[in-house]
Image (cartoon, rainbow, N blue to C red):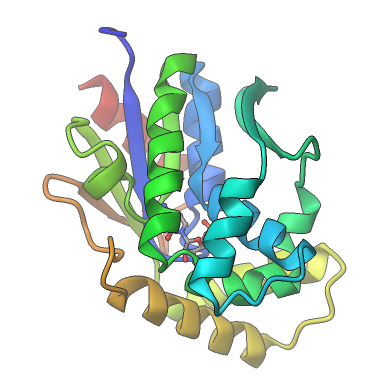
Length: 221
Ligand code: CDP
């Protein structure tokens, strides 16, 4: 475990975390972890069990009632819930709209954080999220906070949704992003903040390659 490195990449929605984290992981041969997928998984499980996601007790019960399993596939961690591996389902609209509220439930965060920490058993990781540098791996020397102007982030997310075949309106994407940012940065438990010692990267006018290079150079220093 001594040589295991954990690179923490935090930031708001559509700040480029996923693409950058995957790029860094690939170049360094580390395993990529999308921590948001776990919050989405808890949300998806609740929704498919017909649970009201505004009812914390019911969400927590559906989370603990399920059987969770984690493994590595193609350089990334994947999980199954009661034997099913949700991937595309996690990006769907109903999950997207409820996930920030589910992720604000302290017991949900405790469950997800413990599972995320245990993934270091798989080896060196690049983990993206909102609280990786502050809560999940606070002792990691490799912390980054990725940001971009809200307009640029909304535009990136809009393009992503449209290319995924979703019929979204640009102004609605902007509104939904703002709403989620607000919940994420004002919640009581583990809000999105810049971790002490994190390198802040504003990617608004940087290329993807530049951002990846900046992260790798800082890790290699
Ligand atoms: O892709 P995007 O950045 O929009 O979202 P995500 O990374 O899939 O995360 C979905 C939601 O999970 C966020 O809006 C947060 O509410 C929550 N989340 C969190 O609270 N802490 C994390 N480490 C990761 C995600």
